[in-house]
Image 1 (spheres, rainbow, N blue to C red):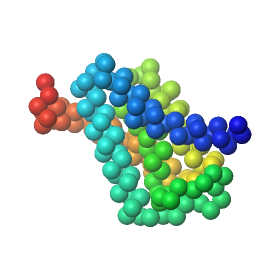
Image 2 (image 1 turned 180 degrees about the horizontal axis):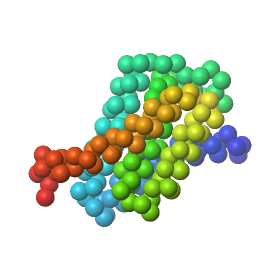
Image 3 (image 1 turned 180 degrees about the vertical axis):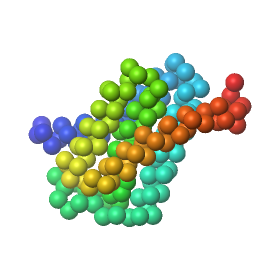
Length: 148
């Protein structure tokens, strides 16, 4: 395999971490947090998706891999890459690892030529901030869904 193929596999691995492994981990350990995580994931996907449709920024023309047919801004990979870092930010032992992983995912998208830097920065900001905002209102969320 070429370095580009490894980089592509690495950058796509965030989908598995964000959508599969973390929910399975939370299912077995903390179901209340699982609800918050699914809410964070759903809200992040919706915000990024609607921004992509609404803004419709073109992708770079110099990509090293096939360019997806979607808009460039904001980066879905960057938002999903930093979402676990924002969600587990309150746990000091995971901060550096998850932030580094998310930053590497985001940077790989620029290296592959499928995003510009503003796409990455906006996606990363959304992916990191949305879980922090949802955590800020977790008591109200639990009260709203009547989870004790």
